[in-house]
Each structure stands twice: as C-alpha cells, then as structure tokens.
Amino acid sequence: MDFDWVWKTVIIIVTGLILLRISGRRSIARMTVPHTVIMIMIGTLMIHPVVSKGLWPTIGAGTILILALIIIEFVELKFDGFESFVSGKAIPIIEKGEINEKNLKKLRFTIDKLETLLRQVGVTTVSDVQYATLEVNGQLGYMLKKEKQPATKEDIQNLIQLIQTGKLPSPINQSTDLKENIFTEVVNKKSLT
Image (cartoon, rainbow, N blue to C red):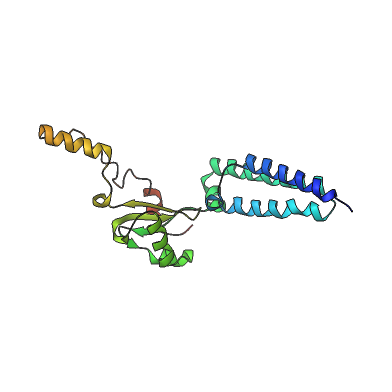
C-alpha cells in the first residue's frame, strides 16, 4: 500500500500555514476580493499533489500566488485608483438618517441585511445613524447622529467643569463635524465606482 500521500499532506499543511502566515492575518470576513480569489486558488492548488504527482510545482504556484498578493497590496498602497479598481471603495448606504435605496439596489443588498448589520453593532433605529457605509470587506461603518452618540470622557469632564465653574472649557472639540470625519470622502461620492 502506497502511503506517499501522507507525507505530501503534511508538507502541504506546513507549507500552507507558512504561506498564509506570510500573506497576513485576515479573517475570511475581512478579506478583500483579491484575497478571497487567491486564497481559493491556493486551497484548490494545495490539495492537488495529494491526488497527483506534482508536489513541488504546487508549492511553487502557491508561493507565486502569495507573492502576487503582496505585490497587489503594495501597488494598492501606492495608487489609490488601482485600489479602487481591485478592492473597491466603501459605499454610502445611509445618509443623514435615510437609507440610500439606490446604492442598496446596486449592491444587491437588502434592507433586512442592513438591519441585521445595524443590530449587530447595537443600533436599533436607522434614523439614529448619520452616515453608514458598506465597507469593501462587507462590514458596516457607521456614525451616529450627534444627539445619539454616547458621552465620551471629554464630554463628562466638560460637564463636571461646567457644574463646578459655571463655564465650559475652551475650545470645545467638534470632531464630529462633517468637515473632519472619515465619512466625508465616501459621502461626497454619490456614484458607485
């Protein structure tokens, strides 16, 4: 009986773990399109030597795929347009407390799925959300309206100072203004790219 497949399987597992470690720590939920495609290809390639005779070509192909992923990530860092083309951009799905149904339809994303994502982050009412985006990894990015945001340590300290002295410290940080928030880039782009 031929047990050649046993040592091949062990080598494939060790090599696969090393290659995945090199490619970076990402859960399946956080993978972008290139990551997903390449990881599926690696999975398909890694089992191939068990049923055929090509162990070293398979390891070589897996290594090339990981190198390709690293190169893609490097080029994405250097060129924003390439990143948009390969991985996509975050798409606004709630703007000023209103669901952007046009973008939901283009994304083939139902209101039920949106509500599920909102519940998972502790949001119970769509109207409490100032902006929400569907990120390239499928997760929800959101910003609550000012009056619905939880108090920060700074807010509490300002309140204590107001009670003690009768005046607010100056200047008060208005970091949630649209001019300064991270949703500005996404919200100002109305079309899907």
